[in-house]
Length: 401
Image (tube, rainbow, N blue to C red; front, side):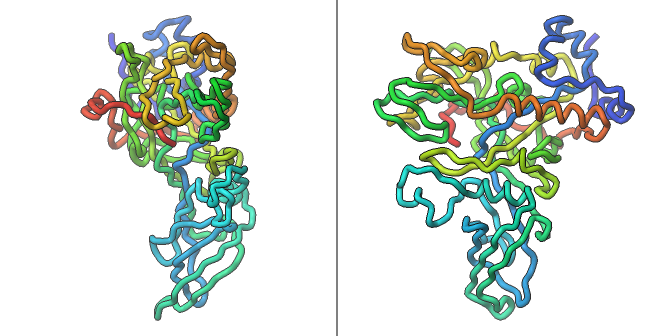
């Protein structure tokens, strides 16, 4: 008899404290021991997690009105510009924004020590932030300058809104050129001196729901240490199957999420300002998604292992952006996490840019919330496009952060 569960049934079990919840790491051994059918029958929710740099992140801020009022034409937070073309005292601060006097604006490949992501972390940590604003002045908003200090609790609203997070999969970056290069995938040594990757693999949210069977608009998630929601598919959401030149499939990739949540209930250890030498600033985000085990197909998806998941190996030197994913082949996450991969007859050291221990911690916290009955699942009002949909006809292009 086919196993079919509903969100309502699972939520009732969560409320009564009877739900069986495992992390995506823990469920692997259960499936190996008991098989897909029995595991699907006994488990109600599987939690996932990831923690890594997610450049397409930022916050909407409402500062409230000063006396006299000001229509903020330009705003700086700790010297970092925020976009103000929204309303009088609203702004959007992007994670990758840098101070106007930052060395990067003179093409200096130095270390960028402070940017939008760091301001966001300082806000969440309840540190004082310097606000500067200027305006041309109007009859209804006569003030032309404002300089003050504020904390997160002084703001009317602070909404984390990230247009592109939780990439379903990501490249393994290498450098074929003869010089060291500085990228959003870190410093890449010349002549295949190292390889960097950025995914939690078997714990990664979208690799555990590759066909978007459960994740959609309205899905409640762990976001930045608090509760957030999937607002839409992310920008550059091109779910598809990655293949090599011979047409061999290496699994799904290309999905992304747009997510939203209240910054005031998030934590600074899960929203971390991050700098990449020679590239710029960003924000490292902790994100986790609970996957309801509605049927055997969902269980089959969440039981995937690092041995079954592959990252395309991509050269990030001069020809980056013109190469197709997997132009140098594919490496399993089991290989990547071993610390070395073999490429072109050479053994190359690997290193992650995302944190697997932190991803495990996210999945564990989410599991604990559900077991305590503090976190119920939401049924999406609409599932996100999958490569099984018509969007699958698009060619999966190389991903940019």
